[in-house]
Image 1 (tube, helix red, strand yellow):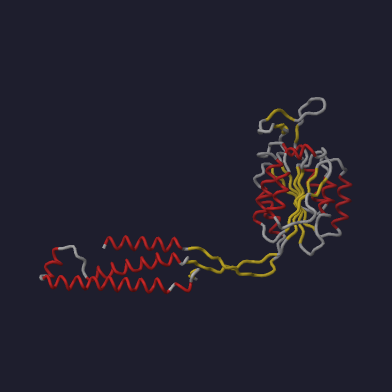
Image 2 (cartoon, one colour):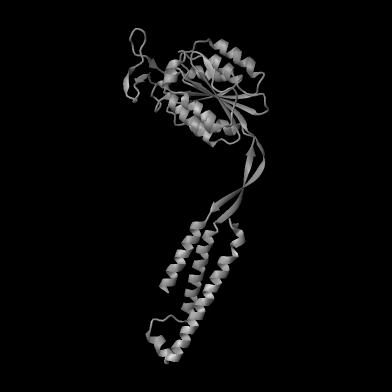
Length: 336
């Protein structure tokens, strides 16, 4: 549907363009009368380039409609369409992110941690009614938000950006998966909403036994309906080093043991798959980081409930179409 921001003035361009057309025809008729007075009008028309009556009518229409189109641009023309869409129930999504030193390995580009952060940010940019939170863990787990939030830009993404290489080297070494699960499940609100946990880790350096993880998580899952998705990250078929970098991002060396031997890291998909099975979740592994986007989207869409159908109005500025039409009509005027 076409409308204008200044709808009350839209009759003025129509009236003025009509007057221009009438004035053009009047001048054409007066020129004809002048030629008749001059004499031999038919002879003049035959050997001159003076347009005939039909060409003059087209020229008059072209110039008047072009003027009308340009005038309507001033009134800011808009085009409104109505689009229906499914309204889906908002989720509570807690991201549980491994920040142990092994996540700095570069078998996934730019490294395991950064790639996970990039894909989390990309997903959050596409969310609308969902609330998100984040728990990080290494030797211990930390909840970086007191409650899930839907303030993506000012809160969640700013906190996500704080998780960098310096943060990784500050937190205690290790990969305390059991502590991370328990803290993440306590991070959900008490509100009625479907709850999703996306757990990202390479699965190395477990400092708590698997039985402890299983029992603690199983007890909590009996009380809360939480869909858990465990995502392994990194190439499980090759050993990778953990580079040290200066402020400019140049590699200055590699992580070593106390004895000076270079540390090599390799993800443990088998362990993560066992944990996923124990907690009743699903497990997927991404060796390159290229599948994270699809894994995240599938997890979200699978848990979305359609609660109704809504319509929204989409308004577009179409001034450029009016200007283009005016230019085309002016070109036609001069061609005729």
